[in-house]
Length: 467
Image (cartoon, rainbow, N blue to C red; front, side):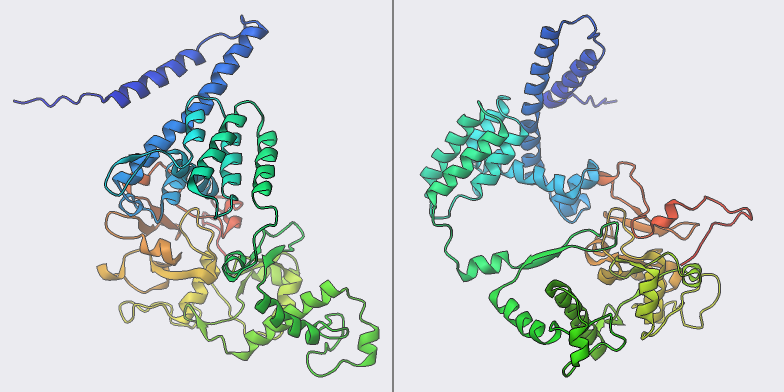
């Protein structure tokens, strides 16, 4: 009989010693130390805190060379980090970017290479600079003009790392910004490539007043288009929501012009609404995920009857109920009833693989968006997923077997990847693959936060349900 003995690797031995040392320190009594001794302890802890990220970089560089995110059951390395260690996607991205610049590298032929920022990496490994210094150097390094040669870049980075040892992050950032300015005092020359890189429009999160901030950079072509639109629809008297019959074509009357007390910004806002409504009503947008491109809002019958509460759009926007009622005045209505038949064919069995429009509307009302925990993609960006049993495994296209899932998450379900099931409460559960399973929640409550507020059971023993 042979007995296989597993010997701990040097890394495992070192990690065990590190944890044991921490436990030993945690058990020490600090009450007997003087303030000078306490400062010395904090000095050592700060140095260790500055050094430990260097080991993260080494391990992360080895992990990314050893396997792929897909083999671990994730869409990207950012998702691997976010799920495994329950950190935000932005923090995961920061760690990956930092490791890419400060961690060890190898050439295509396997030869070891120094880090992209070698002096910064060395200073961090010795505990001479902290994370804020590293972030300042990385941020300003990205702003060095592209025409600066490699040798000069290396000298600049070494200079910044040397200065960082003796100053705070604020002073370092100010010095580095001044250095970048002196390198290119005239600033970048406008060109098509730079404009194409910077173009974009972004929205911020809804505020407590339900307003949504937007920021962006429009190309000359984009703004020229809206100049023409605003010249017509943002003119005084046009598209005024305060008018009983707003003017959206032709020329407003003199009374409409005289009674228009909106600012230019307000008129342009109202013009955007008119443009969007016109495009939606034209029917030229076709279908999106099997439904005509339109605004879909879910709410409850109780909120409609009481004229209080909110509705939620298929994109996740919270809309006050009075706005929901006003918007619904000229809309086609769909009623989702969860405890009785709706008259629409919601169970298709094996007759077809693709969900019907009636099923999609019901899923939008029930799920609100992608059902995978942690995913914030709303219903507009989600597909219909066979959650109880995959179509290839004889799954049924029935409403109680389906769920919403965004495209990337939908594709992560499969052998050696994620699996889904529908529990007895008709909630969709996502079970991670082995490498990403840390006991995290299986249900996504993001799109249906009201579920977190309901009691587990009603007096009659039935779970509370509703659209």
